[in-house]
Length: 322
Image (cartoon, rainbow, N blue to C red):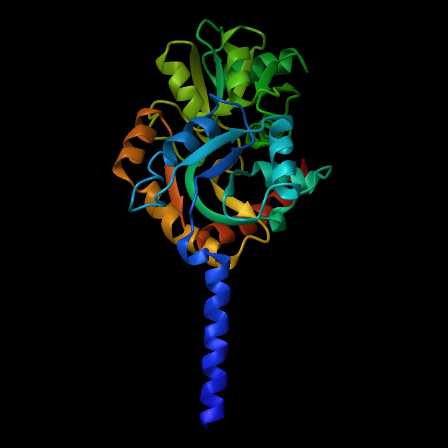
């Protein structure tokens, strides 16, 4: 018995020593970085800076989170880097966008799948909207579709990239309305796509509600329809696509949150999964998000895992049909 107790004690000491050597009990010990795979000024970047602004508080991580932008190819550049080169040490976080990275992995040509990452928590759900410039002749989605029918392939409109939520919304609109549109992906992300609409470089655009809300407040655009199941509290006067006669669901709604690379130590994942959702609930965060027209939708790690799996199943079916 004494030998068993001694062996157990030695094992406990060994495990404790390993934990101390790993340093996980004091994580984090230095500032963190979060990669955003879209450019500065777009909805993901704008929101990422808000939801991380209280990271340094004692009731959060106790250290700040800096944002690193790696835009390009509708998010592919950043997520390829995150999946293949980012350190899995808990100090390199990434912002995810769903359906974007899942749809891109289904279509292929990228170095990641949903299994390349470990979700931490979700902060928002941002539906796509159809926008036109403030002086556009289009005032309803019926106007847009009628033009597209009379001018096949000539209705140019922008979005943040290929197989992002904007592109999926565009594909759904084409199918539901029975028209051919000219979707033009913008490598500068949502901000670049919105600038193209305002500058008159395209006839319209599919963009994030949060980007569109701010642009509409500035008097630069009109918002004609929402790609979601219900109207948004931010845009109570703008009807959904379904209300306007188009059979379009919420598959393009942009879920945003935080993830880490596969291989990140489980104690660090657990610490982040416990802390980050509470950080998102900070009243300062909620106030800033509301002011920017950015819908919040906080989910825990387990809830995000379920959401990712459900979205992957939905997108497999949707993309095969489109």
